[in-house]
Length: 67
Image (tube, rainbow, N blue to C red; front, side):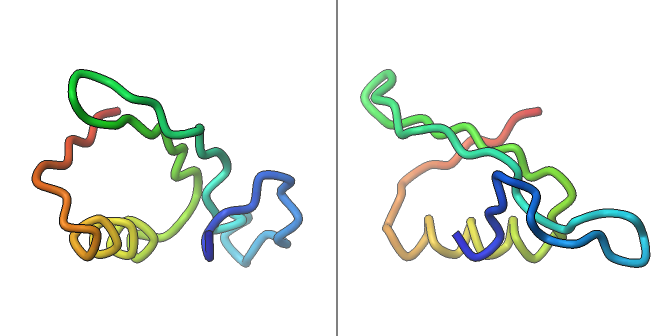
């Protein structure tokens, strides 16, 4: 949630980007697991790092990323 800004309230930086996650879906049960759709928008790579570490801390057995 630290990177989430659905309403684009964060001011753009010098690169004209807001540096935030723009959308996160609700959690959905799927094929014996869960699915969550996230638009990483203009968030920095560290936002993806934070997400992957949080998933590892939650002891997920498998994570799949797609575009």
